[in-house]
Length: 297
Image (tube, rainbow, N blue to C red; front, side, top):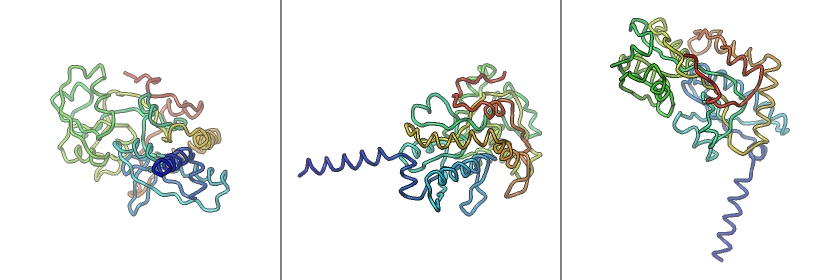
């Protein structure tokens, strides 16, 4: 009896793990979207459990296409906030089905998860107070630098050739808004992070003119919607819709909405045009990892 019971458990486990994301969505009429609370205009909350942003809207379009493909009358989208630390484990264990935040596609992460085609090529920069006098990496010597736990930004800074002899102290925020608060409150002299996240947090600061983005580009990183690994049917459905949006120009319109127009909740404008690498990714859809990009120095 015991062996039959164990065999039954093994069979159930096999069935669960064999279920694709599309199968799960069709069976439950539900999809779980991982979102961020403060990833600039890419993905953020406006309160009351509502999440918006460039990547959130792209994912909503993708899921509408999936709903049509599967013939589902009503698709329930559940929004689950994730952090830099837990986003990959929550994807791997099935808690979330699609992650629409600010995740870099790199070779290490490709061992654990999959990525849709790149929708934004980020440039990691430094945010400081406008009156700080800091304009470059060299001026971080002896300073305190904030970043977000679970990200690679400070490691990227330390690896930069111009930071080899720079000695600075690190402070970590639990999320991007917490890390920005370290800068805003004066506990940190600089905040190192993706440019879009810096710009988004600055735009929602009490006085945006008190801050500026400065210094060298520390790295160039492809940001993409994250998916479960080894699920080609769902990846194809996601990629097909994103590529169609790129070809139609819809993705450029969504960019304009979230980066060039006033956005909620404060109706301030980030004011960031798509860079050349982002426009190239739209013109030639790909899933190249970060290692294929060379940072400008």
